Each structure stands twice: as structure tokens, then as C-alpha cells.
Image 1: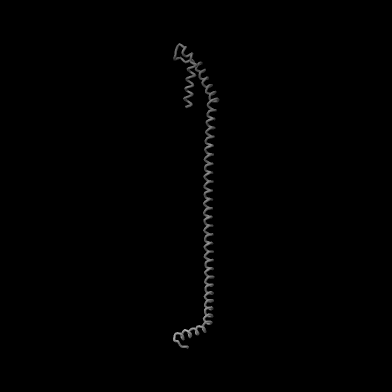
Image 2: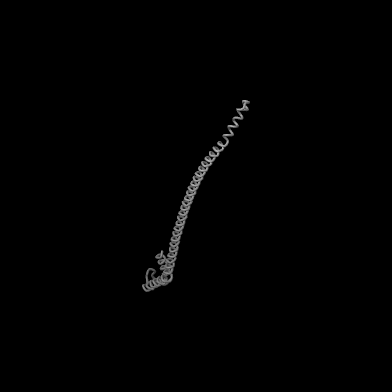
Length: 168
């Protein structure tokens, strides 16, 4: 592209400065001095344009490319860092959930064990109280039986005598 521009500029400069060529008797004749001047003008214009136009434009383009690629790579690094941070936080959250669930299960198991222990203790106390109560009731029943045994015999004699209408 740059070569094409250079060639086009060269032909434009030749056409502009070639007034003498058309004035010459022979159109096909080339004046070496005039050709040297044209070549020098061409080289001078290429050098001036190169320093003042082409190099600054190329440097500007190169800087813009560096800034763009630098910003792009920085954005990619920040995105990767953010993704890593999100992943770490998610892992920490999952670990905390697992730990919380384990603690919850442990507390539940301890509560179940404690409840089972309390129930077993209560059953044991209840059974012992029932045994004590049965024993106490049995003793009281025995005492009452012994107390009312003479009365039972009297009541039995009284009922028998009334049934028979005789005194026994």
C-alpha cells in the first residue's frame, strides 16, 4: 500500500514539474538534468514525508495497538482473578455449609443420645417406683388382711347364722 502511494506521488510530482517535457521538440527525449532534479525532489519529499507524516502515524498506530492489547490483557487478568476469587468464596461457603451440617448432625445425635438416656433413666426410676409401690401395696394389703381376718371370721359366722337362722 505504501509503495503504491509512493509511486502515485512520484507520477504526480513528475507531471506537475514536467512542463519542460511538453515544450521540448522531441516528446520522447529525456533531459538528464531535469530528471535528476525530479529524482532529488522525489527523494527529498519521501524523506520529509517519512519523518513528518509516515513515522508519527506508524508510531501512533503502534502505541494505540500496545495500549489496546495492554488494556485487553489487563482486563483478562482481572477477569481471571475475579473468577478465582469467586471460586474460592464458593468453596469457602460450601465448606462452611458442610461444617455447619456436620455440627448440626452432631448436636442432633447428642440430643437424641441425651433424650434416650433420660428416657431410660426415667423408665428405670418408674420401674423402681412401681416395684416399690407394688411392694408397699402388698405389705399394706397383708397388714389389712391380718387386721380384718378376725372381723372376716365374725362376719362370715354372722352371715352364715342369718342364712341358716341359727347361731353358729
